[in-house]
Image 1 (cartoon, rainbow, N blue to C red):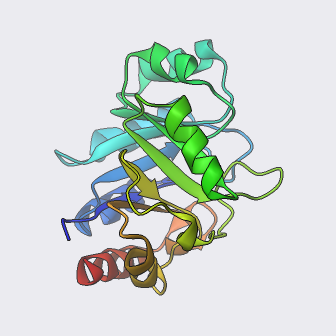
Image 2: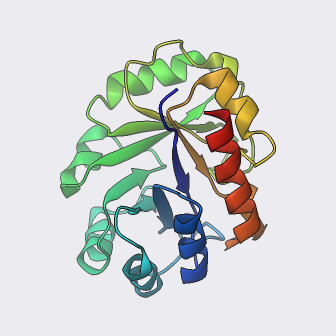
Length: 207
């Protein structure tokens, strides 16, 4: 298997971003959604991104944000990718001139197929668990057997991953990339460096 890419999402502190980078993460996620316990403002996000070493990407997560709100963040924070977790259509996602990830809340294989058709230019689809009324960060996983054998598009596995279950998730899904948030936290929005390191080690061992 090729090297599995790792994103640590919901970063709220510089030290957590540095712990993610030290563990070998490829990207960190910054949440710009006021409904999340992991939300950061532009000033904090800018501080975190400035501390990242070379070749660690900064991903900005939005949920049904107005276009002006996204542009204000982009004017202040040098994000590499955008991640949309709401009901945004492809035309909206591509309007900011950045590559984007589109989150898909998976209840059935049909959800994945519909997203492939609707977002053909996404850098990747991020497949997360469906939880009524929630847009992610729930700590729930979904049935990995729902994943098609050949997705035919870049994708990321998310939803309820932990250092303890990520090896099984990779064995079941053959995911090329994984995204974790709550599974490596000491408390909501506060990462645990030891858990981040354990997660990354488990991914490397499984791959």
